[in-house]
Length: 166
Picture 1 (cartoon, rainbow, N blue to C red):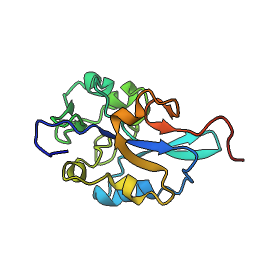
Picture 2 (picture 1 turned 180 degrees about the vertical axis):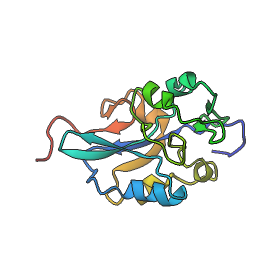
Picture 3 (picture 1 turned 135 degrees about the vertical axis):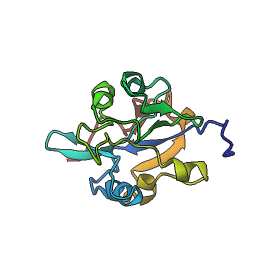
């Protein structure tokens, strides 16, 4: 894939639920890579597990539509990004996101949001959270691989059937 400004990068992060061990190495890599700002949300499944919740970078993002200042926008690569200068921290985006990928608490007076490590992805790399995943639960795959595949839930979370480990 070329990294011209007009091209779309059709790759997204997928989480394999059966491989995630909840180590939170992905959150640590995000924190370090974004100068102390963790843009990755930790989703809790009752008292059973803590899983990373990444922004899905929707084609028609509800968070960007709800933002009263225009701080959230879709860039030329198809990533939903946030302008720190425009964000007033009103949390409207967090309420509008149907996936809970934007936390409700402030970080440096803005609502934190995953930018898919656009600096690395545009240069041909992979997001920090994927590269640091110790169990191999996170992968960065072509979007076409996730859509319509029965093993994927919601196009971004992978599962291997109904039986779960105890």
